[in-house]
Length: 228
Image (cartoon, rainbow, N blue to C red; front, side, top):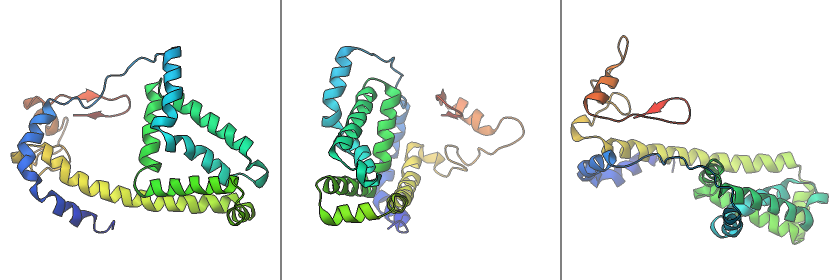
């Protein structure tokens, strides 16, 4: 499927060029980056986060405890320790609802572990943890006798396979979608974000002049580099 990513993306995007003008006009009026909010460490926000954590992020809540239950030795695969792991995960999600930076980590975890094929692997880990805590003989024997390193290797291999697939699918779609945000006359970029005549030269590149001439607004990020 990953090898067919580019042909599939080309087939799906056959009718998209008709929306090029609309998308290019909407981009100029769209705020791409939300302004940062100061944290509000209030009791109301804390109670709100405690209630919303299991309602809005049930898989986030269960994934970390389940992974630990699957990997720990037999003596620690007990409901008491599982409850402690669950409490720690609950508190992390609660504070993530109060602080935007922690909430960003929640989004990253969702993108990496809880969508597509990665989500199926995560659900399988949760099911294995529940079966081990329930004392199912086959699962308990298998996890008790297997090395934690071996189990972790198989889990990492499963995640890595789906991450590779997800990367190529997203790259193929991005190569089809991003040009739609540019006007029709700039359809053949020399590198992403610049038309053909934007080439590097001595001093400042022509890409900067092209951006200023067309009123493209540059906005700094909280990190290295800048995006138009």
